[in-house]
Length: 324
Image (cartoon, rainbow, N blue to C red; front, side, top):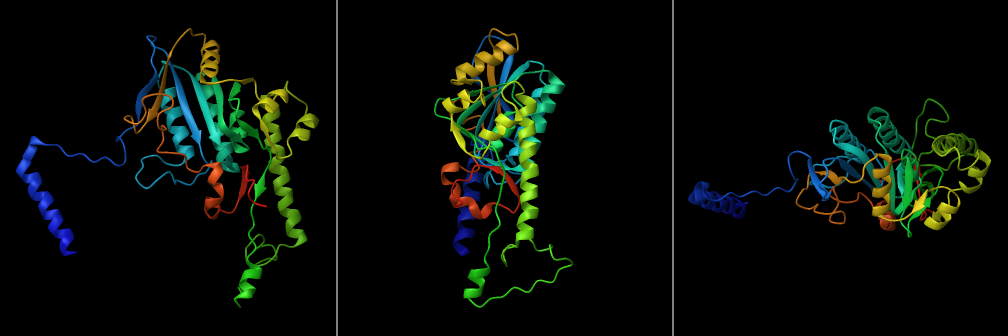
């Protein structure tokens, strides 16, 4: 404690000595307001906005302690609101790198993207990066055109829910949980006892309903790609390579950022435009492939198993291959 006080006194004294001659600014949180940065310069006044959707799609705000960014929903919403107020924004590239996430969060992001298109009449082109699976593919349905990198993994159309069963573990250490409930189903899905067949049937019914909702969104936005029967055959939860996804008509093109940019320019009836992004970290973002517009991906699918304890109880449009 004494050392801390002494250090603070020294710092205060040094600042007093230099007065206004020096300016010390330690900004761990980024800029106070979200700022526009140019990612691809152009002499044109018109702009194309790049929005990143990275990591686990969730309503939980966990991007980092020293961060001004909130959860993925608020990140996307804020950028769409700012873009809708700028008449020079003429289209959006939605860059996806996510294994999916919560059913509700995925649906809200999808809804906000659709609402933005209806409000502005602007095209949205999706650009899939390493992974655009499950909820990532659900969100992509709001896009007018889908471009996947040659190495992209996408698909995983389906729903999953996790119900840990700790009953055997608790019994092994002699711990028993007493539960008082208003009805026999009130603690269904809880970790303190095994799941009955009746409860399993109930939860399966919810999964099936949400799955049909997922299929409905795809069929609504890609009506010429396949029938419901054809879609159900390929929507069994598996992931597909970009080449497989193109053959199955889950995407429209295999390419890179330039392909996505060219498509959105054509759809916006433009020959050229500046590509811009919105960020609290303007010094980090100098080009397309510099550090992310946000402080960093919330979760990376390749290390998702390290974050399983953070998944709250619920239903997910999520590619989770490590649950077996």
